[in-house]
Structures are given as C-alpha cells and as structure tokens.
Image (cartoon, rainbow, N blue to C red):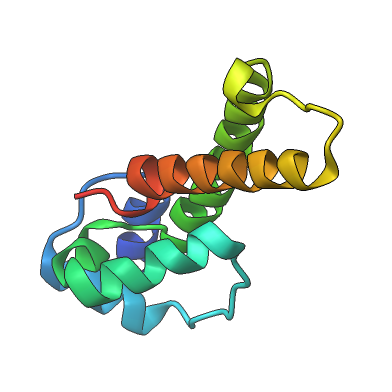
Length: 120
C-alpha cells in the first residue's frame, strides 16, 4: 500500500492495523495542538495508563478536542441541575454561599473526570 493510499484510507475512517497507524504517524507530520484542561488531562492519562489506546485512536486531536467540548457541555448541564438543588442554593451569607459554590464546582469536576477523562 502506498503512502497516498494509506492516507486516503485513514481519511475515510477505515480501520488501520497497528503497523499502518505507525506508518501513518511517520508520514503525516505532527502538528502541535493546544487542548483545554480536560483534553490535556485525558492525554496524560492515556499516555501514562493506556498506552495501547494511542494506537487505536486515529485522530487524536479530534478525540481530545471532543473531550473538551463534552466536558464543557456536561459542566453546563450539571451546573444547571445542581444549582436548583437545595444543597447548593444561595443563602445570602457570603461565606456559606462561597462554600456551596466550591462544593458544587468540586462535584462537577469529579463527575467530568470520572465520566470523560479517566475512562477505560
């Protein structure tokens, strides 16, 4: 298979063998991508704990940017849902409201990490 055929196969989204993925990565010049917080965390997690997964993801930047978008969407949904909960409603007391907001942010962060970033 020529380089052009391999690139065309990857562009069509067809399954590539491990050897083809390695060759594809050698052919296509790497581009530095900037990811958001959760895309970066997902990349570090994959590199440290799921090295095999790097070979199976054909378009890693698209995957990691998708993680960032999903995290943003999930964060908005959870914030809307939790802000209506009695546990996180504002009281008028600055310190109590601050504590509640921080607790809500921590719960949202934990949910995003468990659902999107640290996934096997």
